[in-house]
Length: 326
Ligand code: TXA
Ligand code: MG
Image 1 (cartoon, rainbow, N blue to C red):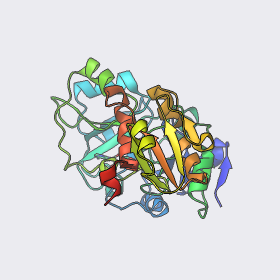
Image 2 (cartoon, rainbow, N blue to C red):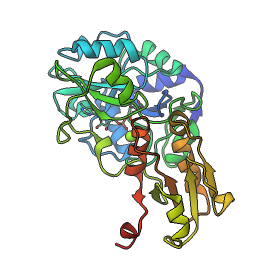
Image 3 (cartoon, rainbow, N blue to C red):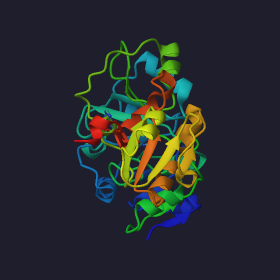
Image 4 (cartoon, rainbow, N blue to C red):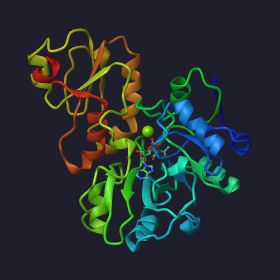
C-alpha cells in the first residue's frame, strides 16, 4: 500500500535512498526520482508501465544554472524562463552530450526541463540539490492525478510514499515548448500558459514537426478514464437522437445543459481555468459512478480552450452516428 504523508524530510530521505516518491506540483502530481540515479528512474518506468523510450521531464529550481545540462538557451527561452518560472511551462532544450542518463531524455540530444511552482517540491529540490525526473503519477495512458488520494487510488498495489501538498492549482499538465532553435519556438503540448499569451509576448510559433522529438503527450490516446468516454459539441443532437448510446450516461457539461439524469451529471463552470482545475477530478468521479459510459462536452474551438480540447479529444471518442456504428 502507498503511504500519504506531509513530511517533507521523509520524502527527501526516500528520494536520497533511491526510492520513488509522488510529489505535488501546481499542474498534476508527479512520480519522482532522483534524476542522477538510474536505478531509481527505472522504478518510475516499471511502476507506471511506461515504455522506456518516452522521455521524462527534469524538474529543477527556477534559479539553477542550466548550463550543466544544456548547450544553449535561445534569448527568447531565457525570457520565457523569466516570465513563467517557477510555473507550468516545460522547455525542451539542446542537451549536452552525456549530461543526463538516456533514461531521462530517451537518448535524444534534447532535454525537457521545468521549474514547478509548489512550495513542498521546491523545498525538496533545494535540499536534495539535484534535479528530479517526474512524469504524471498515473499508470501510462490513464487520467492524471490532482490530489494525493488520486495517486493512491491509481496505484492500489504499489508501495511508495506520496507527499500530500493539497489539490493542484492548475489541474492539467504543463505547456511544453520546444526551444532548440535560436530563431523560434513551437508548442509541443498545450497547457494553461496559452498560445495567446505566449504568442503575444514572443511572436508566432514555428510550424511543428510532429515526427520528432518524441512526446508521449502526442500519442493519439491518453488521459483515459476506465469507462468509455465520448465527447460531443451538441447536446441537443445527442438528446434528440437518443438512444445513440445504450446504457446509462454520466454527462459532464460546460455550457448550460439540462441533463436527463441530474444524479449522473456534473456541470463544469464555463471558464477554461476552472475546467482545467476540475477536469481530471470530474473524470475520476464519473468513472466511479454507476453509469455505463461518460459523455463530456467539447468546449468551442477557440484558442483559450485549446489545452482542454486536446485532453478531451485524446481521452475520448466523438459521439456521432458514424463513429458509434463502426
Ligand atoms: O505538468 C507536468 O509537466 C507534469 C508534472 C508532474 O510536472 N509532468 C508530466 O510528465 O506531464 P509526463 O511524463 O506525463 O509528460 C512529459 C512529456 C511527455 O509527453 C514526453 O514525451 C515529453 O514530455 N518530453 C520529455 N522529454 C522530451 C524531449 N526531450 N523532447 C520532447 N518531448 C519530451
Ligand atoms: Mg502523463
